[in-house]
Image (cartoon, rainbow, N blue to C red; front, top):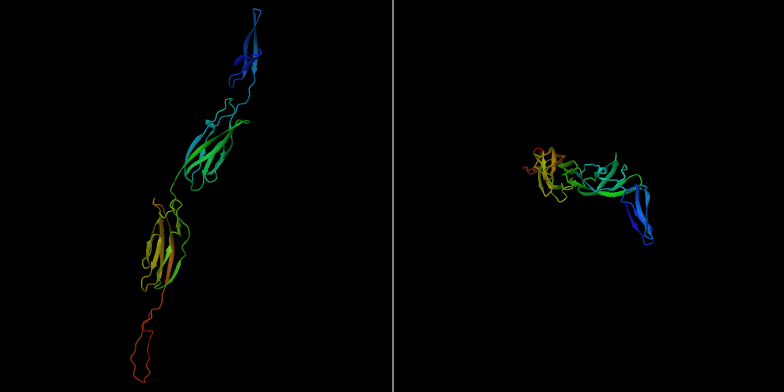
Length: 260
């Protein structure tokens, strides 16, 4: 430590930072040309020092938990055993738990970017706070079926109509219409897809059943499909009839013979 003499003749002893134990200093008193020295023994008692938490970083992928061991970066000059007292993270970024003395961060569903965890360590009496900056890398999510397209029951030679595939499929990564659509399984029902709008046109006089599979694909090639059953019921085709008759003579006309 250090010693200084005050104007009133007293002395001030200041221990070095974080020192505890025994120390001593010698002072000399002079009077009438006579000097005398005396040694003072000082017992510096220990006082608990707060631990020091250090900011950390971590990296994980979207929708993937990560375990972060922050305690090795914390210090305590007294050598006390440290533990994590608490931890928090904004809910829109994810959740954080303390498991076996470590932080376990789980990103919020589909979250990517930077998350900041605030944590507190303790030596059992005093605490200190620091942060962990977690970089969450974006991972492509496949498209999903947003709503099922109902099976279709139609009449032969039905009037063309449309279904919006943009409402049937969705992709959290591609909210600006970046999905592409395709259809398979249609031999007799004609389908044209423009900007996600599927327009259905019949083949003349055809009836029967077909299972059409619609597929949505994102720019990374991930896709999802759903199948819709189309049933086209037959409709009688009525053909106009003609006959030649003799005046005042009943005639039988078979009108059904040429209908199908």
